[in-house]
Image (cartoon, rainbow, N blue to C red; front, side):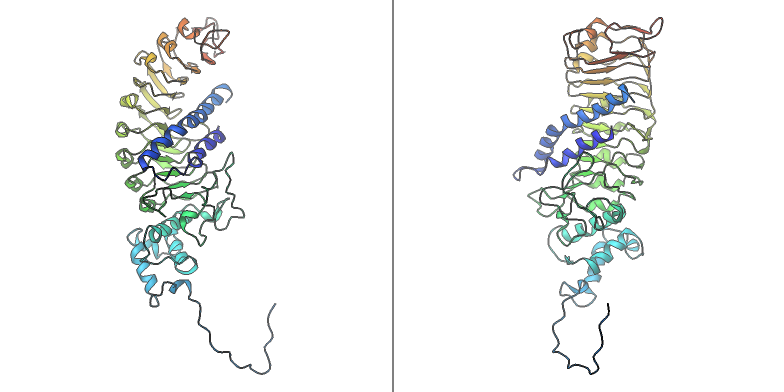
Length: 456
Protein backbone atom coordinates (compact mmCIF):
# COMPACT_ATOMS: atom_id res chain seq x y z
CA UNK A 1 0.00 0.00 0.00
CA UNK A 2 0.94 3.64 -0.37
CA UNK A 3 1.48 4.18 3.33
CA UNK A 4 3.92 1.31 3.55
CA UNK A 5 6.00 2.74 0.73
CA UNK A 6 5.99 6.20 2.28
CA UNK A 7 7.14 4.92 5.64
CA UNK A 8 9.99 2.92 4.18
CA UNK A 9 11.25 5.59 1.80
CA UNK A 10 11.02 8.26 4.49
CA UNK A 11 13.39 6.10 6.51
CA UNK A 12 15.97 6.64 3.79
CA UNK A 13 16.27 10.23 4.95
CA UNK A 14 15.63 9.71 8.65
CA UNK A 15 18.66 7.44 8.80
CA UNK A 16 20.94 10.38 7.85
CA UNK A 17 22.97 12.39 8.41
CA UNK A 18 25.99 10.21 8.07
CA UNK A 19 29.32 10.19 9.84
CA UNK A 20 31.25 13.33 9.02
CA UNK A 21 34.40 11.44 8.15
CA UNK A 22 32.76 9.40 5.41
CA UNK A 23 32.96 10.24 1.76
CA UNK A 24 29.81 10.59 -0.34
CA UNK A 25 30.50 7.20 -1.92
CA UNK A 26 30.95 5.53 1.47
CA UNK A 27 27.77 7.11 2.76
CA UNK A 28 25.85 5.93 -0.28
CA UNK A 29 27.05 2.39 0.13
CA UNK A 30 26.18 2.29 3.81
CA UNK A 31 22.93 4.06 3.07
CA UNK A 32 21.82 1.40 0.60
CA UNK A 33 22.82 -1.44 2.91
CA UNK A 34 20.80 -0.06 5.82
CA UNK A 35 17.73 0.87 3.84
CA UNK A 36 17.32 -1.89 1.32
CA UNK A 37 15.73 -4.28 3.81
CA UNK A 38 13.12 -1.65 4.70
CA UNK A 39 12.46 -0.82 1.04
CA UNK A 40 12.05 -4.46 0.17
CA UNK A 41 9.70 -5.00 3.11
CA UNK A 42 7.54 -2.06 2.01
CA UNK A 43 7.48 -3.06 -1.63
CA UNK A 44 6.84 -6.65 -0.69
CA UNK A 45 3.88 -5.65 1.46
CA UNK A 46 2.41 -3.67 -1.44
CA UNK A 47 2.62 -6.72 -3.67
CA UNK A 48 1.29 -9.09 -1.02
CA UNK A 49 -1.67 -6.86 -0.24
CA UNK A 50 -2.42 -6.47 -3.92
CA UNK A 51 -2.28 -10.21 -4.38
CA UNK A 52 -4.07 -11.28 -1.21
CA UNK A 53 -6.90 -8.69 -1.28
CA UNK A 54 -6.71 -6.12 -3.79
CA UNK A 55 -7.35 52.06 15.18
CA UNK A 56 -5.83 55.42 13.84
CA UNK A 57 -3.73 58.08 15.73
CA UNK A 58 -4.83 61.73 16.35
CA UNK A 59 -2.84 64.65 14.89
CA UNK A 60 -1.62 67.30 17.42
CA UNK A 61 -2.94 70.82 16.98
CA UNK A 62 0.60 72.20 16.91
CA UNK A 63 3.42 70.42 15.24
CA UNK A 64 5.86 69.02 17.75
CA UNK A 65 9.55 69.78 17.36
CA UNK A 66 11.16 67.37 14.98
CA UNK A 67 13.41 64.86 16.73
CA UNK A 68 17.00 64.53 15.66
CA UNK A 69 17.17 62.17 12.65
CA UNK A 70 18.23 58.60 13.38
CA UNK A 71 20.15 56.39 11.00
CA UNK A 72 17.69 54.37 8.94
CA UNK A 73 17.85 50.61 9.02
CA UNK A 74 18.91 49.25 5.64
CA UNK A 75 16.11 47.77 3.62
CA UNK A 76 16.42 44.27 2.27
CA UNK A 77 17.14 45.61 -1.18
CA UNK A 78 20.27 47.51 -0.07
CA UNK A 79 21.33 45.26 2.80
CA UNK A 80 24.69 44.32 1.27
CA UNK A 81 26.16 47.81 1.54
CA UNK A 82 26.19 48.21 -2.21
CA UNK A 83 25.11 51.37 -4.08
CA UNK A 84 21.34 51.61 -4.66
CA UNK A 85 20.22 49.10 -7.26
CA UNK A 86 23.59 47.37 -7.43
CA UNK A 87 22.53 44.31 -5.40
CA UNK A 88 19.57 43.74 -7.68
CA UNK A 89 21.72 44.16 -10.77
CA UNK A 90 24.39 41.71 -9.60
CA UNK A 91 21.90 39.13 -8.36
CA UNK A 92 20.01 39.29 -11.65
CA UNK A 93 23.26 38.64 -13.50
CA UNK A 94 24.07 35.75 -11.18
CA UNK A 95 20.67 34.12 -11.51
CA UNK A 96 20.56 34.63 -15.27
CA UNK A 97 23.17 31.88 -15.45
CA UNK A 98 20.76 29.62 -13.55
CA UNK A 99 17.39 30.43 -15.12
CA UNK A 100 16.18 31.91 -18.37
CA UNK A 101 16.45 35.70 -17.78
CA UNK A 102 13.01 36.15 -19.34
CA UNK A 103 11.51 33.93 -16.66
CA UNK A 104 13.15 35.96 -13.89
CA UNK A 105 11.54 39.21 -15.07
CA UNK A 106 8.14 37.79 -16.08
CA UNK A 107 5.56 38.37 -13.30
CA UNK A 108 3.92 35.23 -11.98
CA UNK A 109 6.68 32.76 -12.80
CA UNK A 110 8.37 30.81 -10.00
CA UNK A 111 11.64 32.45 -11.02
CA UNK A 112 10.14 35.95 -10.75
CA UNK A 113 8.63 35.13 -7.36
CA UNK A 114 11.91 33.72 -6.08
CA UNK A 115 13.97 36.70 -7.28
CA UNK A 116 11.46 39.21 -5.92
CA UNK A 117 11.37 37.42 -2.56
CA UNK A 118 15.15 37.47 -2.22
CA UNK A 119 15.35 41.08 -3.32
CA UNK A 120 12.58 42.59 -1.20
CA UNK A 121 11.34 40.21 1.49
CA UNK A 122 14.11 37.88 2.60
CA UNK A 123 15.63 39.24 5.81
CA UNK A 124 18.49 36.76 5.54
CA UNK A 125 20.03 39.12 2.97
CA UNK A 126 22.07 36.98 0.64
CA UNK A 127 24.68 39.02 -1.20
CA UNK A 128 26.03 38.39 -4.70
CA UNK A 129 29.60 37.79 -3.50
CA UNK A 130 28.82 35.71 -0.42
CA UNK A 131 31.07 32.64 -0.31
CA UNK A 132 29.84 29.07 -0.59
CA UNK A 133 26.67 27.64 -2.04
CA UNK A 134 24.07 29.90 -0.43
CA UNK A 135 23.75 32.73 -3.02
CA UNK A 136 22.69 30.41 -5.86
CA UNK A 137 21.29 27.66 -3.65
CA UNK A 138 18.88 30.01 -1.88
CA UNK A 139 17.47 31.21 -5.19
CA UNK A 140 17.11 27.69 -6.58
CA UNK A 141 15.36 26.47 -3.43
CA UNK A 142 12.95 29.39 -3.67
CA UNK A 143 12.29 28.54 -7.32
CA UNK A 144 11.66 24.94 -6.25
CA UNK A 145 9.27 26.15 -3.52
CA UNK A 146 7.21 28.26 -5.90
CA UNK A 147 7.38 25.69 -8.72
CA UNK A 148 5.82 23.04 -6.48
CA UNK A 149 3.22 25.55 -5.23
CA UNK A 150 4.72 25.92 -1.78
CA UNK A 151 1.88 28.24 -0.85
CA UNK A 152 -0.25 25.11 -0.63
CA UNK A 153 2.14 22.82 1.27
CA UNK A 154 0.57 21.30 4.37
CA UNK A 155 3.79 21.12 6.37
CA UNK A 156 6.63 23.61 6.85
CA UNK A 157 5.76 25.86 3.94
CA UNK A 158 6.11 29.61 4.46
CA UNK A 159 2.32 29.82 4.70
CA UNK A 160 1.70 26.48 6.42
CA UNK A 161 -0.13 26.56 9.73
CA UNK A 162 2.17 23.84 11.07
CA UNK A 163 5.77 22.82 10.76
CA UNK A 164 5.99 19.40 12.32
CA UNK A 165 9.57 18.17 12.40
CA UNK A 166 8.60 14.62 13.39
CA UNK A 167 8.04 12.01 10.73
CA UNK A 168 4.72 10.18 10.70
CA UNK A 169 3.57 7.08 8.91
CA UNK A 170 2.51 9.25 5.99
CA UNK A 171 4.80 12.29 6.09
CA UNK A 172 8.55 12.67 6.08
CA UNK A 173 10.05 14.63 8.95
CA UNK A 174 12.81 17.23 9.16
CA UNK A 175 16.45 16.34 9.42
CA UNK A 176 17.80 16.90 12.95
CA UNK A 177 18.72 20.54 13.41
CA UNK A 178 17.06 21.59 10.15
CA UNK A 179 13.49 22.31 11.25
CA UNK A 180 12.65 25.83 10.03
CA UNK A 181 9.78 26.57 7.66
CA UNK A 182 10.67 27.25 4.07
CA UNK A 183 11.66 30.83 3.20
CA UNK A 184 12.60 31.48 6.85
CA UNK A 185 15.47 33.93 7.38
CA UNK A 186 18.00 31.19 8.09
CA UNK A 187 20.28 29.29 5.77
CA UNK A 188 18.33 27.27 3.22
CA UNK A 189 20.02 24.16 4.63
CA UNK A 190 17.88 24.63 7.74
CA UNK A 191 14.54 24.59 5.93
CA UNK A 192 12.67 21.41 6.83
CA UNK A 193 13.39 18.59 4.41
CA UNK A 194 16.83 19.85 3.41
CA UNK A 195 20.12 18.52 4.69
CA UNK A 196 23.77 19.45 4.18
CA UNK A 197 25.68 16.39 5.33
CA UNK A 198 28.86 16.53 3.25
CA UNK A 199 31.68 17.83 5.50
CA UNK A 200 33.70 18.72 2.41
CA UNK A 201 31.04 21.23 1.31
CA UNK A 202 29.54 22.80 4.46
CA UNK A 203 26.30 24.66 3.92
CA UNK A 204 25.64 22.95 0.57
CA UNK A 205 22.40 21.01 0.25
CA UNK A 206 22.85 17.31 -0.38
CA UNK A 207 19.35 15.97 0.33
CA UNK A 208 15.77 17.08 -0.30
CA UNK A 209 13.17 14.89 1.40
CA UNK A 210 9.61 16.20 1.25
CA UNK A 211 6.91 13.53 1.15
CA UNK A 212 3.14 13.85 1.38
CA UNK A 213 2.86 17.61 1.89
CA UNK A 214 0.49 18.12 -1.09
CA UNK A 215 3.08 19.35 -3.53
CA UNK A 216 1.84 20.12 -7.02
CA UNK A 217 3.11 22.10 -9.97
CA UNK A 218 6.39 21.12 -11.59
CA UNK A 219 9.95 20.06 -10.85
CA UNK A 220 12.25 22.93 -11.95
CA UNK A 221 15.33 22.22 -14.02
CA UNK A 222 17.21 24.70 -11.84
CA UNK A 223 17.75 21.92 -9.32
CA UNK A 224 20.74 20.94 -11.45
CA UNK A 225 22.53 23.84 -9.75
CA UNK A 226 22.34 22.19 -6.32
CA UNK A 227 25.70 20.75 -7.20
CA UNK A 228 26.18 18.25 -4.37
CA UNK A 229 22.61 16.93 -4.29
CA UNK A 230 22.47 13.15 -4.17
CA UNK A 231 19.03 12.46 -2.69
CA UNK A 232 15.63 13.66 -3.93
CA UNK A 233 12.38 12.35 -2.50
CA UNK A 234 9.06 14.01 -3.34
CA UNK A 235 6.40 11.36 -2.80
CA UNK A 236 2.66 11.56 -2.94
CA UNK A 237 1.28 14.71 -4.51
CA UNK A 238 0.12 15.97 -7.89
CA UNK A 239 3.37 17.16 -9.46
CA UNK A 240 2.60 16.89 -13.15
CA UNK A 241 5.69 17.85 -15.08
CA UNK A 242 8.14 15.70 -16.92
CA UNK A 243 11.45 14.92 -15.23
CA UNK A 244 13.88 17.65 -16.30
CA UNK A 245 16.73 15.98 -18.20
CA UNK A 246 19.08 18.54 -16.63
CA UNK A 247 18.83 16.62 -13.36
CA UNK A 248 21.07 14.05 -14.97
CA UNK A 249 23.85 16.63 -14.65
CA UNK A 250 23.90 16.14 -10.87
CA UNK A 251 27.17 14.27 -10.55
CA UNK A 252 26.32 12.69 -7.17
CA UNK A 253 22.66 11.84 -7.79
CA UNK A 254 22.02 8.45 -6.21
CA UNK A 255 18.46 8.33 -4.89
CA UNK A 256 15.58 9.61 -7.03
CA UNK A 257 12.09 9.01 -5.66
CA UNK A 258 9.01 10.70 -7.16
CA UNK A 259 6.40 7.99 -6.80
CA UNK A 260 2.67 8.58 -6.39
CA UNK A 261 2.73 11.83 -8.36
CA UNK A 262 1.41 12.71 -11.83
CA UNK A 263 4.80 12.75 -13.56
CA UNK A 264 4.55 12.45 -17.32
CA UNK A 265 6.98 11.67 -20.10
CA UNK A 266 9.80 9.16 -20.08
CA UNK A 267 12.89 8.50 -18.01
CA UNK A 268 15.42 11.06 -19.32
CA UNK A 269 18.30 9.62 -21.35
CA UNK A 270 20.64 11.64 -19.13
CA UNK A 271 19.71 9.41 -16.19
CA UNK A 272 21.16 6.39 -17.96
CA UNK A 273 24.50 8.20 -18.10
CA UNK A 274 24.51 9.06 -14.39
CA UNK A 275 26.32 6.00 -13.12
CA UNK A 276 25.94 7.11 -9.48
CA UNK A 277 22.21 6.32 -9.55
CA UNK A 278 21.36 3.56 -7.09
CA UNK A 279 17.60 3.99 -6.60
CA UNK A 280 14.93 4.99 -9.11
CA UNK A 281 11.42 4.94 -7.68
CA UNK A 282 8.75 6.23 -10.06
CA UNK A 283 5.82 3.91 -9.48
CA UNK A 284 2.25 5.16 -9.80
CA UNK A 285 2.75 8.10 -12.12
CA UNK A 286 1.60 8.83 -15.68
CA UNK A 287 4.83 8.06 -17.47
CA UNK A 288 5.23 6.62 -20.95
CA UNK A 289 8.00 5.42 -23.20
CA UNK A 290 10.11 2.33 -22.75
CA UNK A 291 12.73 0.97 -20.40
CA UNK A 292 15.96 1.53 -22.27
CA UNK A 293 18.68 -1.10 -22.27
CA UNK A 294 20.95 1.78 -21.26
CA UNK A 295 19.65 1.27 -17.75
CA UNK A 296 22.22 -1.49 -17.57
CA UNK A 297 24.89 1.24 -17.60
CA UNK A 298 24.04 1.93 -13.95
CA UNK A 299 26.40 -0.37 -12.01
CA UNK A 300 25.18 0.73 -8.55
CA UNK A 301 21.45 0.33 -9.25
CA UNK A 302 19.90 -1.74 -6.48
CA UNK A 303 16.26 -0.53 -6.52
CA UNK A 304 14.10 0.00 -9.61
CA UNK A 305 10.37 0.50 -9.12
CA UNK A 306 8.31 1.64 -12.09
CA UNK A 307 5.07 -0.29 -11.63
CA UNK A 308 1.51 0.67 -10.79
CA UNK A 309 0.48 -0.44 -7.31
CA UNK A 310 -2.73 1.55 -7.06
CA UNK A 311 -3.94 4.43 -9.25
CA UNK A 312 -0.91 5.00 -11.46
CA UNK A 313 -0.99 4.73 -15.23
CA UNK A 314 2.67 4.24 -16.07
CA UNK A 315 2.89 2.66 -19.51
CA UNK A 316 6.36 1.45 -20.41
CA UNK A 317 5.52 -0.35 -23.62
CA UNK A 318 8.07 -2.67 -25.11
CA UNK A 319 10.25 -5.33 -23.62
CA UNK A 320 12.21 -5.62 -20.41
CA UNK A 321 15.90 -5.38 -21.40
CA UNK A 322 17.65 -8.75 -21.19
CA UNK A 323 20.70 -7.17 -19.56
CA UNK A 324 18.68 -6.15 -16.52
CA UNK A 325 18.96 -9.68 -15.22
CA UNK A 326 22.73 -9.27 -14.98
CA UNK A 327 22.86 -6.10 -12.88
CA UNK A 328 25.13 -7.22 -10.07
CA UNK A 329 23.66 -5.03 -7.30
CA UNK A 330 19.97 -5.14 -8.21
CA UNK A 331 17.86 -6.18 -5.22
CA UNK A 332 14.40 -4.84 -6.06
CA UNK A 333 12.71 -4.87 -9.46
CA UNK A 334 9.03 -3.90 -9.66
CA UNK A 335 7.65 -3.37 -13.16
CA UNK A 336 4.13 -4.57 -12.50
CA UNK A 337 1.20 -3.47 -14.66
CA UNK A 338 3.12 -1.28 -17.13
CA UNK A 339 2.30 -2.94 -20.46
CA UNK A 340 5.45 -4.98 -20.98
CA UNK A 341 5.60 -7.57 -23.76
CA UNK A 342 8.15 -10.15 -24.78
CA UNK A 343 9.84 -12.74 -22.62
CA UNK A 344 11.24 -12.74 -19.12
CA UNK A 345 14.97 -11.93 -19.03
CA UNK A 346 17.36 -14.45 -17.60
CA UNK A 347 18.18 -13.41 -14.05
CA UNK A 348 21.60 -14.51 -12.85
CA UNK A 349 22.50 -12.50 -9.75
CA UNK A 350 22.07 -13.81 -6.18
CA UNK A 351 21.57 -10.22 -4.97
CA UNK A 352 17.99 -10.10 -6.32
CA UNK A 353 15.49 -10.21 -3.45
CA UNK A 354 12.22 -8.94 -4.92
CA UNK A 355 10.89 -9.54 -8.44
CA UNK A 356 7.43 -8.39 -9.54
CA UNK A 357 6.57 -8.47 -13.25
CA UNK A 358 2.87 -9.18 -12.75
CA UNK A 359 -0.05 -7.83 -14.79
CA UNK A 360 1.81 -7.46 -18.06
CA UNK A 361 1.70 -9.31 -21.41
CA UNK A 362 4.85 -11.36 -20.99
CA UNK A 363 5.05 -14.64 -22.88
CA UNK A 364 7.28 -17.69 -23.20
CA UNK A 365 8.35 -20.23 -20.63
CA UNK A 366 10.20 -19.77 -17.36
CA UNK A 367 13.16 -22.00 -18.15
CA UNK A 368 15.54 -19.20 -19.15
CA UNK A 369 16.53 -18.44 -15.56
CA UNK A 370 18.61 -20.65 -13.32
CA UNK A 371 16.27 -20.08 -10.41
CA UNK A 372 18.44 -21.96 -7.98
CA UNK A 373 21.18 -19.36 -8.45
CA UNK A 374 18.90 -16.62 -7.11
CA UNK A 375 19.78 -17.45 -3.52
CA UNK A 376 18.62 -14.07 -2.15
CA UNK A 377 15.16 -14.09 -3.74
CA UNK A 378 12.29 -13.73 -1.25
CA UNK A 379 9.35 -12.56 -3.38
CA UNK A 380 8.51 -13.82 -6.86
CA UNK A 381 5.37 -12.38 -8.50
CA UNK A 382 4.76 -13.61 -12.04
CA UNK A 383 0.94 -13.66 -12.14
CA UNK A 384 -1.36 -12.21 -14.76
CA UNK A 385 0.92 -12.78 -17.73
CA UNK A 386 0.85 -15.20 -20.65
CA UNK A 387 3.64 -17.52 -19.61
CA UNK A 388 3.39 -21.05 -21.00
CA UNK A 389 4.93 -24.39 -20.16
CA UNK A 390 5.36 -25.77 -16.67
CA UNK A 391 6.56 -24.29 -13.38
CA UNK A 392 10.31 -25.02 -13.09
CA UNK A 393 11.30 -27.32 -10.26
CA UNK A 394 14.50 -25.27 -9.80
CA UNK A 395 12.43 -22.60 -8.06
CA UNK A 396 12.38 -25.07 -5.19
CA UNK A 397 16.13 -24.53 -4.82
CA UNK A 398 15.68 -20.90 -3.71
CA UNK A 399 16.47 -21.17 0.01
CA UNK A 400 14.61 -18.14 1.43
CA UNK A 401 11.62 -17.74 -0.88
CA UNK A 402 8.57 -16.47 1.04
CA UNK A 403 6.00 -15.72 -1.69
CA UNK A 404 5.51 -17.17 -5.14
CA UNK A 405 2.59 -16.22 -7.38
CA UNK A 406 1.84 -18.01 -10.66
CA UNK A 407 -1.87 -17.16 -10.93
CA UNK A 408 -3.73 -16.18 -14.10
CA UNK A 409 -1.12 -17.40 -16.55
CA UNK A 410 -1.08 -20.16 -19.18
CA UNK A 411 1.21 -22.38 -17.12
CA UNK A 412 0.11 -26.00 -16.84
CA UNK A 413 1.15 -29.28 -15.22
CA UNK A 414 1.82 -30.11 -11.59
CA UNK A 415 3.39 -27.94 -8.90
CA UNK A 416 6.85 -29.50 -8.47
CA UNK A 417 7.38 -31.38 -5.24
CA UNK A 418 10.64 -29.45 -4.80
CA UNK A 419 8.61 -26.25 -4.41
CA UNK A 420 6.06 -27.87 -2.08
CA UNK A 421 8.94 -28.99 0.14
CA UNK A 422 9.88 -25.35 0.70
CA UNK A 423 6.49 -24.52 2.19
CA UNK A 424 6.47 -23.52 5.85
CA UNK A 425 5.63 -26.25 8.38
CA UNK A 426 3.66 -28.36 8.68
CA UNK A 427 3.34 -28.63 4.89
CA UNK A 428 7.09 -28.44 4.30
CA UNK A 429 10.29 -27.48 6.04
CA UNK A 430 11.06 -24.17 4.34
CA UNK A 431 10.22 -20.48 4.32
CA UNK A 432 7.53 -20.32 1.60
CA UNK A 433 4.47 -18.81 3.29
CA UNK A 434 2.34 -18.02 0.23
CA UNK A 435 2.14 -20.16 -2.86
CA UNK A 436 -0.49 -19.39 -5.49
CA UNK A 437 -1.32 -20.98 -8.82
CA UNK A 438 -4.21 -21.72 -11.19
CA UNK A 439 -5.19 -24.84 -9.30
CA UNK A 440 -8.96 -24.39 -9.07
CA UNK A 441 -11.40 -25.74 -11.60
CA UNK A 442 -12.10 -29.21 -12.92
CA UNK A 443 -9.68 -30.26 -14.07
CA UNK A 444 -7.25 -27.72 -12.62
CA UNK A 445 -4.84 -25.99 -14.99
CA UNK A 446 -2.09 -26.64 -12.45
CA UNK A 447 -2.39 -29.49 -10.01
CA UNK A 448 -1.23 -28.24 -6.61
CA UNK A 449 -1.77 -29.92 -3.25
CA UNK A 450 0.42 -27.48 -1.29
CA UNK A 451 -0.83 -24.09 -2.54
CA UNK A 452 -2.20 -21.52 -0.12
CA UNK A 453 -4.53 -20.14 -2.80
CA UNK A 454 -5.94 -21.53 -6.01
CA UNK A 455 -7.15 -19.25 -8.75
CA UNK A 456 -9.78 -20.53 -11.21
